[in-house]
Length: 278
Figure (tube, rainbow, N blue to C red):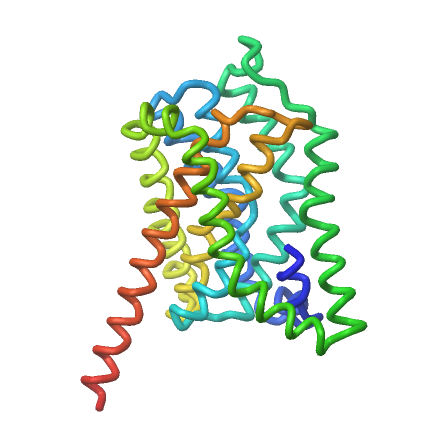
């Protein structure tokens, strides 16, 4: 989030006024459609209450900061990617507590005493872990632009490996729970990622957005902030439950496999088209 703040410009937020359709489609896909898909899959796969909450948790988190790099590799609209990541990070300060409260009630987890959601603590933690780092990054960029550029280059390279390291550590710590439930939960998470990509592509095509914008929206909707989901699930101030973090751990691993495959396919297709044109 600090790295995101280092790269933000005032023009990134004005993109909503200048090109409202791509921004709105991306935000609707992320903040509305994706949680609904997660809810439908949780019901379809008959997930236990804690996994139910976990799958909706990952779906209602904002876009991952690595999505900007993926958009660049896919030849997408990087400015749009940064805008969507920034706006979703701010908007989810409000929407995550609301959606999670609904998910906890719908799963029946709170009714059986399996989990309790302290909304106030969640709001405070999200502000500390998201809003504050973004604001600090923006401040550094404003006062020390040269330093901000150098820091952004370094942090941009370590964000993705850091997420993989985090997911790997949690996987080792909770491998028995993950492996015991990987069949059901892995299928559900994979379905969430694939459906997110399909729906994002369909929404983009229905609104006749360009292929460059479509690729960006597909990546933004398909790449959620798994680190935030793990932080919320494992935080001693919120759920303090590694079982709820399990879907996010599996998601972090599968998401990158699927989206790296998507980016590779896009680059290969583009290379073939360039060869034909030449």
